Image (cartoon, rainbow, N blue to C red; front, top):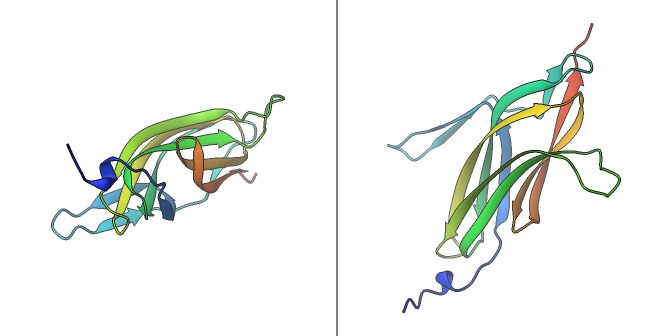
Amino acid sequence: MNDDISSRVQQYPICTAIVLCDRVKFDSTTGRKTIKGTFDRLVAAKHEPISTRFHVYVELTDGLGTVPLEVQVVTTNKKTDGAEDILFSSKCVAKFPHQMKTTTAVFEVKVQFPEPGIYNCFLKSDDKIIIKKRIIINEKAK
């Protein structure tokens, strides 16, 4: 029997950083991470879909136990039933042996935005939103 409390209790973490970027490089010698090409908006031709690939870097703390994580990229135009269109979704699991542990997760996103507009990137755990980051797709100037 395992008496470790973190194996029996789950506490949702607090997100201390969410960054949209082109790439995240990990240095195995120093343990440092280099985030390259940060953004919050992209440019697309008018009324044309934009296919892109990027990374979502998140830093989490104050979690406890094994916590499921999910990144979703969604439209902000709600359907008539109130639901949003999910354009991308990816899941992983974060382990927090104690509340003082800080952990990072990086999600690779491959998504097609249907048209210029405002989209949301959610970090969720068990369908509970931990943090939201807005992504703006601007029309290309003529």
